[in-house]
Length: 346
Image 1 (cartoon, rainbow, N blue to C red):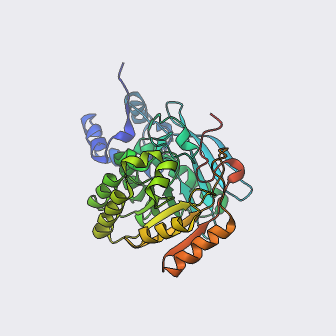
Image 2: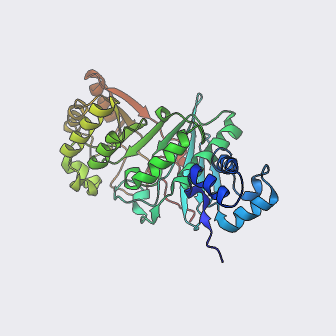
Image 3: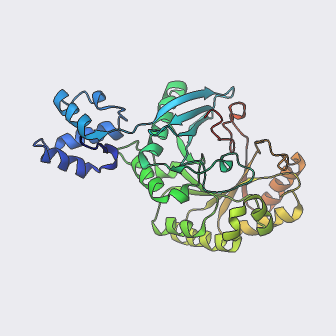
């Protein structure tokens, strides 16, 4: 019995070569490639401009390991959360976040997470495996369809802020973005894509060396090593000095400013020292700060800071000519907000 291969692991050139070996025309590979990526075909039977015999031959040699949206939930605020079942039965979550002018896909890069951030529900899941490029791509394609269905326009933006640490699945994430941005894929501009990392210096430098065109965000949450190590224990191996040097390298190579994702908690990073440490860190490279509303995960050690503290952060950052935005959480009623993705269904 022939062991069937994952057809989406083949390049267009390899598909064309396959058809030539089978005595068919090269262009047949182009047709199949378009069905797989532009049209997101779930099965060979969907490929209606290809003969039944050819579809049968493809079925005998290959599989399409397509995702299935196992459960879709809609929030009162319009946010949509997908529980996505992978070909091996594992589940990840992805989110469609609408605003008046655009829709954003928040996608996952790992099943579970490699890291141990204390405030994040996803980090409490064991990392099962990395997602393949096509599994990442499929999440985006599914949300694009939902954007068209519910909001009557194509997906506007993509953020890699779902389950997992994208830079710990570096090659697959970059391959997925290559497909997402290709005209032979979804054709989304890399400038509309943001990859968010918890801050792995050597991988940030690799991004710069690879001359990526997408945006970079860093989950910072404190610019004081002792505090950051407490809430994100893995950062003991990645001190802020190393992160600073990596970001300076990034900016020197790309000229692209960095976004810092920053949650403020009561009694953790709500002091004047914490604010001034962030101001100092923001001076190293051009940046903006996104202050994110905390979404509880049932840990009493993490409580939303007093609104006055958040106002202090805003005023002091602005006083120092640092761009700051406040991000209100969306989809909290369906556990779709930042830090809440934890496969509660599975």
